[in-house]
Amino acid sequence: MRSFAVTQIKATAVMAGLDEVKVIDKPLRSSITDPLPRIELEYLAEDLTFKSKRIAKFNSPDDPQKYRRVRKQRYREKLTLRVTVWADNKIWLESFVKAFLLALPNKVADGDNNLVTISASRAVRGGFESKAVEVFKKRSNALHINFIGMLCSDQDIPLITDVNLKDGVDYKEQS
Image (cartoon, rainbow, N blue to C red; front, side, top):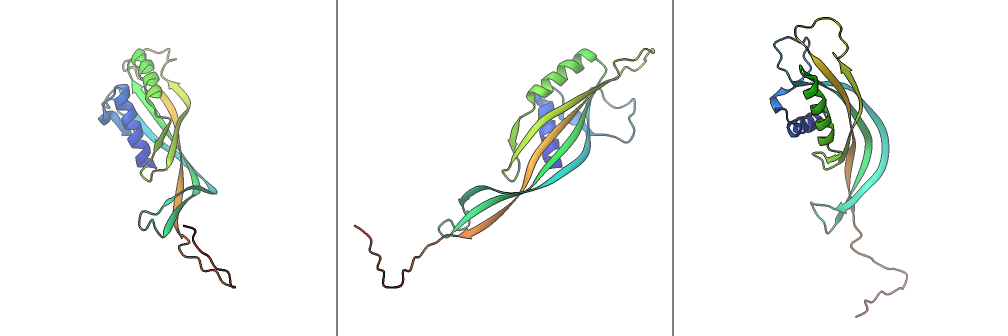
């Protein structure tokens, strides 16, 4: 789920107008040599909830004449990323965050073709209320983005292909 989330964040940042190479994982220490503007990604705790429900039935790709595949959801997973947008220009920061949120997809299929819902839950601004003289002005807006997906298992169930009636009952096809 992490690699899927990073791919979606990078694609959204490119659509909003930032280069893909400026989307990085959060460093241990920030430096004045870090490029501005940039996006730093921080992974928060992932929540797993047990859910057992049938979500799909379809023909088995291996042998569609004899088996039907049933997909069951086993777990619901929720990954929250703190996406911090750093910039030195507050006007650019405001317009970029707005464009980023508007470009963020709502529902996307992951690599296993399962539905992932993406939503932003909160925004925390930083660097706007400083009363001191700043040499290197850095403004930030930290967005908490939730990726809610599912872990599924597939099971092949044999189809009934032959019926044998007993106890003196005859079955005749009507023509």
